[in-house]
Each structure stands twice: as structure tokens, then as C-alpha cells.
Image 1 (tube, rainbow, N blue to C red):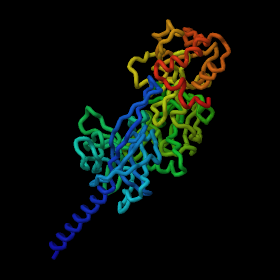
Image 2 (image 1 turned 60 degrees about the vertical axis):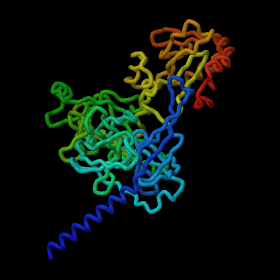
Image 3 (image 1 turned 180 degrees about the vertical axis):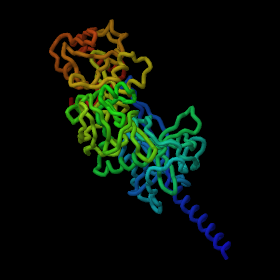
Image 4 (image 1 turned 45 degrees about the vertical axis):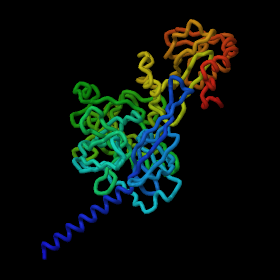
Length: 479
């Protein structure tokens, strides 16, 4: 009798496992995207390209996927596993920081009889996972197994920012992006990227990031993941510990820089942050987020929503203090050179055949010929005097700009002696100038002089010659 019971139990367990796997498969979708490609060297031009990715149906008739699967999209279609019919979809919400997006489908038939997948907590080390998706090499659903091999902060390729990530040893290939990692029938991560030259090293966006994103967009907008706007230094060296009066029992991070728009929020250069939200910060800048598991202390910043307060224990001039700091800005609001941007046309302005644009990571990444002096701006912080870098990208050859046709990737510091703080201010200075000649200057005093009469006279012909529809981008129309 006992043997019969065990056999029946085994059969029931197997049937339930097959049933649950079938339900999981039904919730996996393939995503077809048509993208608009932006050209930051010729910002009036675009191109079209296509890609495919994966996603999963979650509660609320929503499809969870990667932001990079649908970034710069012009048209999106989705289809179920085991079906051929495609449904039109659209982006409901997106976080390019976290490489996450939600899609909606207008036709409710798409979600009929589908059991949405649930989102689990952060998985444990060596926990078994299965990657579901539609990678290159075929059209059928692919399932690859692996384990969680590491959990720590890692740079997200899509945004360039560093957040918590799950490393797995399951096979991940193009097309897997956006697909779920399933363990015990629940989502424990979303496939994000791999290391091409490594053997089976892939990365997932963890559920801590997913839940933050889903909570963030409940009010209909994406505020993003906040930054403290500070630079810190490790305190592993004994000499620096003695200099700042740190005892052997105390650990933390030395504040070495505070961005100008975050000054006055409670921290000062020279402060030592010893704990965040009650969690000790080690001298290498890590915190314990689970027993015997460490990652960067920004882990506890990333858990907060924008507008919330983070609590810090600090040592200032050898005195222990507590400060509470309100989180107001994402990292892109604190940088001189903005990190990778999506879903927006490049900003540009053409005057006298000179093409100008704000310096961004997108621009830096699209050209191998950018000089070091321009690249170094990406390592600098903004100030009240300079919040953006304005760059001369190239010169569209014309009679009025002879002698300067070779100029490209040149940073503009002043217009007629006035220092530039932003791209819009730069455009305003040129458009409002009453001078016959406009003088542009870089930090070294090198000058470009533009004849305004010749520029205005030749503008229409020049734009027509180079097939340029407008002398400025749409964001400057109401400037």
C-alpha cells in the first residue's frame, strides 16, 4: 500500500509540474520591434532597423520586458508562444536606467485565459533558474537552465549606470533579452545582457529593481532611481584612517565631492559616512545586504523612491552625527555630460554652416575621432557657470565659413565674451545678437568668427544643399 501511495504521489507531482510549466510557457511572449536609429553626427537624419526580444505577462494585462528591447520604437508587435498571430502593442512605461519596460496590448483577447506570472523575492546563491525566451537560432520557445552564481552591483549596458544584478550561468543569447528567469514558477529576474567572450556568464535585472520600477510608476510617471550626488573614497589605507581620526572599529566612506545642486543637503566634503539606513558601510564601500553577502552601499539608496529620505550616520571633525537627506535627483540631472538617452531626437543648431550640439554620451559613443579634451568633460561635474558642454560637431562647407572647414568636435566656452552655461543659452545668445560678427571662444582663447550677414543670406541655400529640413531641432522651436 505504501508503494502505491508513493507512486500516486509521484504521478500527481509530475502532472502538476507539467501543468505549471505549461502555464508558464503560455505567459511568455515574443516581441517584434521597429526602431528609429538616431544619428548624433547628423542629428536631422534617422534610420530604421528591426529587432526581436522576449517578455512575460504579469498582473494587470501588462508585458514585462527590457527597455532596450523597445527603446526608440516606432512600431511594436507581440505574439504568444505556440501561436502565429501578432498583436499590436505599445510602451506603457519605461525605465531606461533599470532597463525595464511595460507594454500594453489594446486587444484584450491577447490576455484571455493566460495566468500572469508572479514576481518573487531576490533569489539565493546557487538557486536553480530557467531562462525562457526566443533567442537567435530558431523560432520556437527556448528554455535554458542554470544557477545563480553571483549577486552584486554591475554596470547595465543600456543605461551605463551601476545597479544590483544577478549573474547566472544559463545560456543567454540575442533575442533572450526581456525574457524571465523562472524559479519555483515565479519570476526572479529579467534577462538583461551577457558577456560575449565569456562562457555562459549572463546578467538579470533582479526583482528588487523590478518592484521599485512597478511601485514608481503607480502614479503614472517614472521618477527613476535617485542619486545622492556625491563622490566618496575608500578608507582601507591605515594612514588616511589615522588622518581622519577613525578608530579600528569604525569603517566607512570619505566624502570627497558634492555636486553643486546637492550642496547644503546635510553632507560636507570631509565627512565620513559610516552607516546608511542603519547598515554599516565597510571601508571598501560595501554593505551587507544579506548574511555574508556584500555589495555597494548604494544598494540602500536604490531601495528608496524619489522624494524619500535616506538616513546616514557620519563622522564630522571626529564627532558622530546623524543626517537625513531627501532624494531629489537622478544621476543624469547631476552630470555635465548626460549618459545614454533614448526615445528623443538629438538636439542641434546650425548657424553659418556650423553644426552645434550639447555633448552627450550618445555623441561620444558614435564617433571614434573625438579628441581627448572633449572626452574629459565626461569625467567632470557641472557648476553654476557650466551645466552643459556645447560642442561644434562639424562645419558644413560654405563660402561664408572658408578656412574653418577642418573644425570638428570643438568645445565652445564663450559667445562674444559671455560664458555659456547651457545649450539653450548658447542658442539664445546667437539668435539675439545684434553684432555684425559673432565671436566663439574655447577655454584656450581660440576663436571662430561668424559673419552674421553672410550666414543669414546663405542659410536657405546651405540647408537645401545638404538636404537638411531645419536649422534647429524641434526642442528649440519654442526656445
